[in-house]
Image (cartoon, rainbow, N blue to C red; front, side):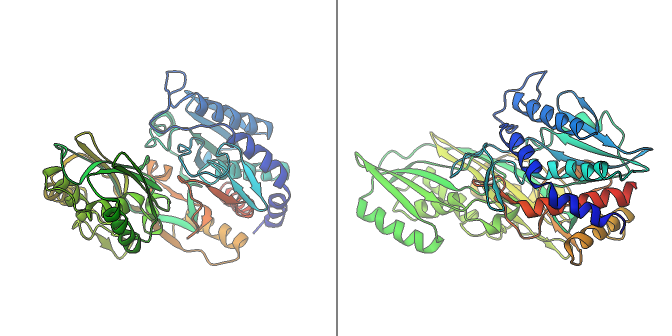
Length: 470
């Protein structure tokens, strides 16, 4: 393939400049999740605008034509002729959350490993896309058609930034987003966001649960959960903790003050679409709490029904009667990401990754049935359908050939869950940046990326751009 050696050489030699630019982007805490402070001038928060302005500054300095849409979307272009390809990435990030060893907004370089919020999701890949275009510009590789880099600032906030772009601009012939994994995600699994709630009368005597609280982000497996228990002896609690630790494989600690025990469970966080790779601190805590000799009351019955429906370790939804599967995309995954049981109210948020073939109406019927058995209200049951683009699509064939050239291995298609910008376009896929099976702890503490992966992605993206637009 033409220019492959020139592209590869550039990707290998841009290490220091890439690191310096990425460090500046990571230093901007561009969180767009629920807690951002919005305004007409900054719909997804002032830090998101700062990150966008910084990226536009970098794009201009490297020779791209730039413009912005409403302080929400950044556009940078290279090439002549009609627009043929969009590469769409995002500059907003998840909240840092607990458990970091390094400063989440100061990029830390440890040999070939980079740590920081956004290094893998999605500032590192976004910058790799820019450096891919830079590889073409600085080596005098001209394009007959235009490639457009698109940078969003509200992807983590349910992709509410994308209408600013898609309502203002015509769709491209093809797009990809470097916000998933290699070789290519050409089958999108269906997805749903669930929210449950129920009121209860707190139990006033005997062994009782004062509160259970865990998780801050429905998109990540909870790493911590706390509970407050009263009316139990330390001996009985200690014995229950020992048994729960054996069953769940997770550690529990507790403190006692005036006869009240404060418990904490420690899990292993990962992205919700990889719930089977994490260890949920909330479901582990519920298993422990519900195994205690709790007083008989409606509040405790409610808590037990919930725990029995979504037991620890059952991320496929089998006990709830929610397991779904097909031959194209495999089985379902359920992540209990946020849970509160306190002050007379239970609330729970679950992110569901469903097979490609799942249908909205039948899935909602299953959810309604499960909620009825637990005794909770369904406050939300969104549904995002799956889709599939064949591997013999001409654009996809060019991406796969570019991957095979620079990775030296045969490419294949993947069926994956998780929301990404590709779902907002009629003809698009997720392409890069991590090799399939790699867990960079995106959405969790100590998010990381390998520098070699980013450099190789620069080469893959540059080759892909040339094959499509050259």
